[in-house]
Image (cartoon, rainbow, N blue to C red):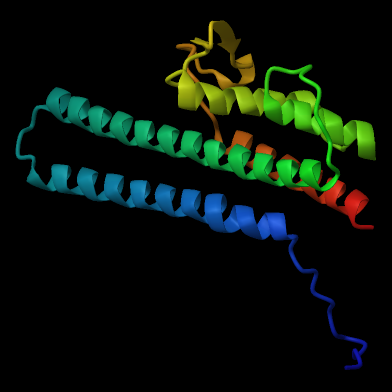
Length: 198
Protein backbone atom coordinates (compact mmCIF):
# COMPACT_ATOMS: atom_id res chain seq x y z
CA UNK A 1 0.00 0.00 0.00
CA UNK A 2 1.43 3.35 -1.03
CA UNK A 3 0.95 6.39 1.14
CA UNK A 4 -0.49 9.48 -0.45
CA UNK A 5 1.16 12.84 0.41
CA UNK A 6 -1.73 13.85 2.71
CA UNK A 7 -2.02 10.50 4.50
CA UNK A 8 -1.20 10.65 8.19
CA UNK A 9 0.77 7.91 9.84
CA UNK A 10 -1.05 6.77 12.96
CA UNK A 11 1.19 5.84 15.84
CA UNK A 12 0.00 2.72 17.62
CA UNK A 13 -0.14 2.94 21.40
CA UNK A 14 2.31 0.79 23.34
CA UNK A 15 0.85 -2.41 24.78
CA UNK A 16 1.37 -1.05 28.32
CA UNK A 17 -0.69 2.06 27.48
CA UNK A 18 -3.48 -0.16 26.18
CA UNK A 19 -3.22 -2.32 29.32
CA UNK A 20 -3.48 0.74 31.59
CA UNK A 21 -6.32 2.22 29.59
CA UNK A 22 -8.36 -0.98 29.83
CA UNK A 23 -7.65 -1.88 33.45
CA UNK A 24 -7.13 1.46 35.21
CA UNK A 25 -7.84 4.67 33.28
CA UNK A 26 -11.24 3.87 31.74
CA UNK A 27 -12.45 2.24 34.94
CA UNK A 28 -11.41 5.30 36.97
CA UNK A 29 -13.07 7.72 34.54
CA UNK A 30 -16.34 5.75 34.52
CA UNK A 31 -16.30 5.50 38.32
CA UNK A 32 -15.89 9.27 38.67
CA UNK A 33 -18.68 9.87 36.15
CA UNK A 34 -20.94 7.56 38.15
CA UNK A 35 -20.11 9.40 41.38
CA UNK A 36 -20.78 12.78 39.75
CA UNK A 37 -24.13 11.58 38.36
CA UNK A 38 -25.21 10.07 41.70
CA UNK A 39 -24.26 13.25 43.56
CA UNK A 40 -26.13 15.44 41.11
CA UNK A 41 -29.22 13.20 41.35
CA UNK A 42 -29.16 13.07 45.17
CA UNK A 43 -28.75 16.84 45.51
CA UNK A 44 -31.56 17.48 43.01
CA UNK A 45 -33.91 15.03 44.80
CA UNK A 46 -33.10 16.53 48.18
CA UNK A 47 -33.75 20.08 47.01
CA UNK A 48 -36.96 18.94 45.34
CA UNK A 49 -38.25 17.11 48.44
CA UNK A 50 -37.35 19.74 51.01
CA UNK A 51 -40.15 22.06 52.00
CA UNK A 52 -38.42 23.57 54.99
CA UNK A 53 -37.22 27.12 54.90
CA UNK A 54 -34.56 26.25 57.46
CA UNK A 55 -31.41 27.19 55.55
CA UNK A 56 -29.19 25.82 58.29
CA UNK A 57 -30.71 22.34 57.93
CA UNK A 58 -30.54 22.54 54.13
CA UNK A 59 -26.92 23.71 54.23
CA UNK A 60 -25.96 20.99 56.70
CA UNK A 61 -27.54 18.22 54.62
CA UNK A 62 -26.04 19.49 51.35
CA UNK A 63 -22.64 19.73 53.01
CA UNK A 64 -22.98 16.16 54.32
CA UNK A 65 -23.89 14.85 50.85
CA UNK A 66 -20.98 16.69 49.23
CA UNK A 67 -18.51 15.29 51.81
CA UNK A 68 -19.87 11.78 51.21
CA UNK A 69 -19.30 12.06 47.46
CA UNK A 70 -15.86 13.61 47.94
CA UNK A 71 -14.96 10.55 50.07
CA UNK A 72 -16.09 8.34 47.19
CA UNK A 73 -13.90 10.31 44.77
CA UNK A 74 -10.95 10.00 47.15
CA UNK A 75 -11.47 6.23 47.33
CA UNK A 76 -11.68 6.03 43.52
CA UNK A 77 -8.34 7.86 43.19
CA UNK A 78 -6.71 5.56 45.73
CA UNK A 79 -7.97 2.41 44.00
CA UNK A 80 -6.83 3.75 40.62
CA UNK A 81 -3.33 4.21 42.02
CA UNK A 82 -3.32 0.66 43.39
CA UNK A 83 -4.23 -0.60 39.92
CA UNK A 84 -1.65 1.62 38.21
CA UNK A 85 1.25 0.59 40.45
CA UNK A 86 0.24 -3.08 40.26
CA UNK A 87 0.12 -3.07 36.44
CA UNK A 88 3.41 -1.14 36.30
CA UNK A 89 5.08 -3.64 38.62
CA UNK A 90 3.76 -6.51 36.49
CA UNK A 91 5.48 -5.05 33.43
CA UNK A 92 8.71 -4.31 35.29
CA UNK A 93 8.72 -7.88 36.63
CA UNK A 94 8.33 -9.13 33.05
CA UNK A 95 11.44 -7.20 31.96
CA UNK A 96 13.42 -8.42 34.98
CA UNK A 97 12.50 -12.02 34.16
CA UNK A 98 13.39 -11.59 30.46
CA UNK A 99 16.86 -10.46 31.48
CA UNK A 100 17.07 -13.11 34.25
CA UNK A 101 18.06 -10.43 36.76
CA UNK A 102 18.30 -11.02 40.51
CA UNK A 103 17.54 -7.62 42.13
CA UNK A 104 19.47 -6.68 45.26
CA UNK A 105 17.41 -5.63 48.27
CA UNK A 106 18.62 -2.05 48.61
CA UNK A 107 15.18 -0.41 48.65
CA UNK A 108 12.09 -0.97 50.80
CA UNK A 109 9.92 -2.03 47.88
CA UNK A 110 10.39 -4.92 45.52
CA UNK A 111 9.39 -2.60 42.68
CA UNK A 112 12.23 -0.18 43.42
CA UNK A 113 14.70 -3.07 43.65
CA UNK A 114 13.55 -4.33 40.25
CA UNK A 115 13.87 -0.85 38.73
CA UNK A 116 17.37 -0.51 40.17
CA UNK A 117 18.34 -3.86 38.60
CA UNK A 118 16.98 -2.75 35.21
CA UNK A 119 18.81 0.58 35.48
CA UNK A 120 22.06 -1.25 36.27
CA UNK A 121 21.61 -3.48 33.22
CA UNK A 122 20.03 -1.15 30.64
CA UNK A 123 21.04 2.33 31.82
CA UNK A 124 19.25 4.87 33.97
CA UNK A 125 15.60 5.18 32.98
CA UNK A 126 13.97 8.59 32.44
CA UNK A 127 12.15 8.64 35.80
CA UNK A 128 14.04 8.32 39.10
CA UNK A 129 13.55 5.09 41.04
CA UNK A 130 12.58 7.16 44.12
CA UNK A 131 9.45 8.41 42.35
CA UNK A 132 8.20 4.85 41.90
CA UNK A 133 9.30 3.80 45.37
CA UNK A 134 7.14 6.62 46.75
CA UNK A 135 4.19 5.37 44.67
CA UNK A 136 4.77 1.81 45.91
CA UNK A 137 4.63 3.11 49.50
CA UNK A 138 1.34 4.87 48.75
CA UNK A 139 -0.05 1.62 47.34
CA UNK A 140 1.24 -0.29 50.38
CA UNK A 141 -0.38 2.22 52.74
CA UNK A 142 -3.71 1.85 50.95
CA UNK A 143 -3.55 -1.94 51.06
CA UNK A 144 -1.78 -2.61 54.37
CA UNK A 145 -2.01 0.62 56.36
CA UNK A 146 -5.61 1.86 56.00
CA UNK A 147 -4.34 4.82 53.91
CA UNK A 148 -2.41 6.34 56.83
CA UNK A 149 0.80 8.36 56.62
CA UNK A 150 2.61 5.82 58.81
CA UNK A 151 1.87 2.21 59.63
CA UNK A 152 3.68 -0.84 60.86
CA UNK A 153 4.23 -3.75 58.49
CA UNK A 154 6.23 -6.86 59.36
CA UNK A 155 7.59 -5.12 62.45
CA UNK A 156 8.85 -2.04 60.55
CA UNK A 157 7.45 1.49 60.35
CA UNK A 158 6.52 2.47 56.79
CA UNK A 159 5.88 6.07 55.67
CA UNK A 160 4.22 7.81 52.75
CA UNK A 161 5.90 10.85 51.14
CA UNK A 162 4.34 14.14 52.31
CA UNK A 163 3.22 15.11 48.79
CA UNK A 164 0.62 12.33 48.92
CA UNK A 165 -0.88 13.33 52.29
CA UNK A 166 -3.70 15.67 53.23
CA UNK A 167 -3.86 17.96 56.26
CA UNK A 168 -5.08 15.09 58.49
CA UNK A 169 -2.06 12.96 57.48
CA UNK A 170 -4.15 10.55 55.43
CA UNK A 171 -3.17 9.46 51.94
CA UNK A 172 -4.88 11.63 49.35
CA UNK A 173 -4.28 11.78 45.61
CA UNK A 174 -5.37 14.43 43.17
CA UNK A 175 -6.20 13.97 39.50
CA UNK A 176 -2.82 15.56 38.81
CA UNK A 177 -1.03 12.97 40.96
CA UNK A 178 -2.69 10.18 38.98
CA UNK A 179 -2.02 11.81 35.63
CA UNK A 180 1.64 12.38 36.50
CA UNK A 181 2.07 8.83 37.80
CA UNK A 182 0.44 7.38 34.68
CA UNK A 183 2.56 9.43 32.29
CA UNK A 184 5.79 8.57 34.11
CA UNK A 185 4.95 4.86 34.32
CA UNK A 186 4.25 4.79 30.57
CA UNK A 187 7.46 6.69 29.83
CA UNK A 188 9.53 4.30 31.96
CA UNK A 189 8.02 1.10 30.50
CA UNK A 190 8.43 2.30 26.91
CA UNK A 191 12.05 3.31 27.60
CA UNK A 192 12.95 -0.12 29.00
CA UNK A 193 11.06 -1.87 26.22
CA UNK A 194 13.00 0.04 23.57
CA UNK A 195 16.27 -0.87 25.28
CA UNK A 196 15.24 -4.53 25.42
CA UNK A 197 13.79 -4.64 21.89
CA UNK A 198 15.60 -2.02 19.79
